[in-house]
Length: 361
View (cartoon, rainbow, N blue to C red):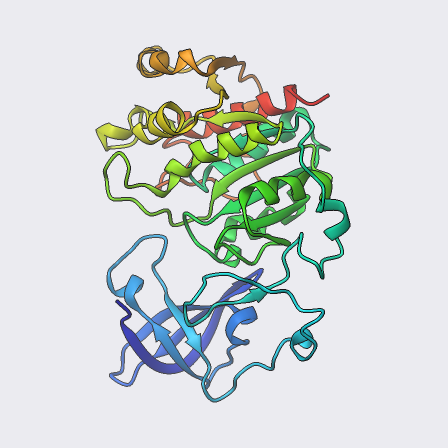
């Protein structure tokens, strides 16, 4: 449960879109690294008293290794401007029934300026949508898109399997100029647009943001237990179903690696095999780079063979993709491994982005 701490802000550290990193001095003389979301709790300043949820930091969790600011109790932020007039306020409640539930304007609700556009929207018109099970694939997919279609409008749909606030992602902050917009769906929040469901978010990507293609992936900090079904990224299979239901073109980015120390993630990760092989009921185009190391390529082919009854395996040439990955606007990292340490992983994601551009009209 919650491990509470109280302290005083000693200094502000890095800041990025929607988030502020800070040092907090505790009464016992220790110092704790913390993260605040100003949209939720206000902007901290040195000397402020803060209440913290310190559980993830004390447990030593990797991506979640911060204490999170729950409140600045002596300097609460003002109510949002629209709170006095509920006729114009949004009523989407996310992180529902938790103490910091935000109330947001949904892209398709009555008060939204996009309501008329989305009221009867029901089709993606063949828009390609790349699905990936890890947030770290996003910049690599974008690199593959930009290699062939530098001016394509790309929307990102952040699902709620990982971090709920889009503000947590430094990667996303660094990619703002690369994206037509971010849509936070389900319980996730903090995007340029808010959607109740992935279906609504996909339609908003097409009809509000005017995206040529989209990427669907959870936020950073995925949840996993080391079992076949106990992984939040399994929802990738449901994303394939949603895309196909709405008349889109699902493009599967496979989690391929010959560097992951865990056997279940070598070759094609068992999570990709479960999501696309068991959960996705609609067909997708699963992308494999065409010049993998021969031993790795043999592993990948063997793993994907049972999936060919439903899905189409697409071999994509990789010329130029390494250079595109090295020119990424943000650092590439997955599970602590950079591009050179896990080249196949990033190359597979970039190849999926390249294939999506090949499907553009």
